[in-house]
Length: 107
Image 1: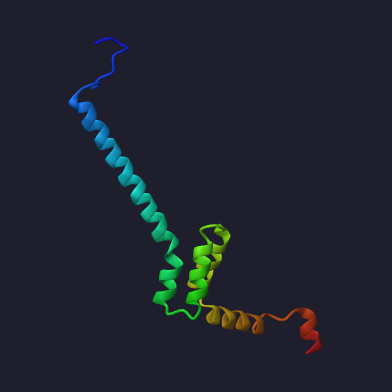
Image 2: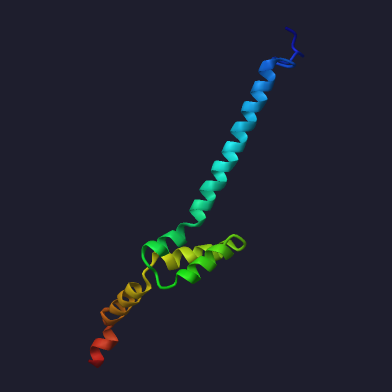
């Protein structure tokens, strides 16, 4: 065997290796696309599981997120954050904030 010869050329093993490489390539691409699709559908699945009131909005934002990716982030936030609880928590935090020295003197 010389340095310029390539192993498996013009043999049955060459064809088998090409077919195997093609199958691995197609399977890898398919698995990657499926994984990206399932990850992209995550906000919709979460909204359905929580019976979210804004399922239509989250679905639309998820689909728009294929073009503008920042919109998908908004869909994730809407799907995973319970806005009613967040607003109540924010209100309670605002009402129970420690008073400053000036507010204490006025009271």
